[in-house]
Image 1: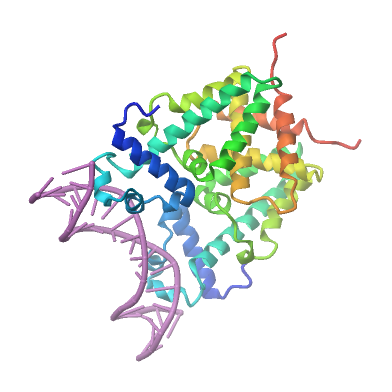
Image 2 (image 1 turned 30 degrees about the vertical axis):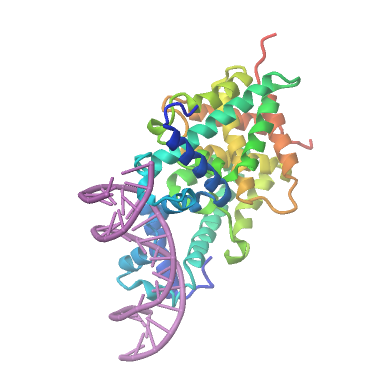
Length: 179
Length: 179
DNA sequence: GTCTATATCAAGATAGAC
DNA sequence: GTCTATCTTGATATAGAC
């Protein structure tokens, strides 16, 4: 988890998370974060070298939370990939601003907590029988649907649940099974 | 097209398009646009009421260009939906910054040129036999793959073309045909 | 159609004292 | 670990003259 951070850095990170979730990516500035912490903005730089590093810590945390949630998909009955996609969609809707931060731009992977991204990727690939090409297609579908939903791109009268089901049916029909 | 704009507004729009394509969405500021035009930023407001209106004009233009390109998919042999998806992907890679402006945020549809969005949507839905739910799933897949590619989210060694083929195969297998 | 002058606001980051 | 003071840069937009 955040074991590489000092206790104070963890506090700052927790406040940053709250600020992000409540006010969105645009509201997450060093000044506003400092205000919530009751300190001045320059003080934050004693704990994180840059805003980008702080964001990377938030992103790493998000990946680890997603990964942990995905693991539950293998415990319940039914197709794990179906459960993972439901969990993925629910995560994005519960944490829309964190989701955007995690997925809606380029990633500077050098700043991430090592292994954090993999903790989300590995269960998803496993649920697709190790088929990485299919996993990438599924990632495309799932991210696309999610971000289009978050950005309100579908018409108000659209049956978005049905679109999810149709895509999911198409993709699960492509899983190779050895039996 | 741009028939509702004055000649001078069309010139400004053309310069804005060049600026966007060359420097990206972050580089498109009223100051920099004015600089390219050889005028001062406040002068632009005599031609467009706001930056958002100018961006909406760029977006409308993009939709119309996409729509016109999609129409060609029905003239060539083979599955129109396959051709449309190829055209969609190629458009995004040729105009990545315009693509982001068009698709990677919420849309204020009131500011668009009426009918412009539809000119891109209608051929795509038609190519999927009028199945709007499947069309939305396909939109999710196609937008997701595209934006993940533009944001460099796939590993360097990933076979992204193969992921596109896999998703496309899954989706085309879902088209209902009456024959 | 363009100008100057200006309002208003905000951002990330550093130096150096305590 | 926090502070003050500051640098540097940038943005959208309006008023009113020419």
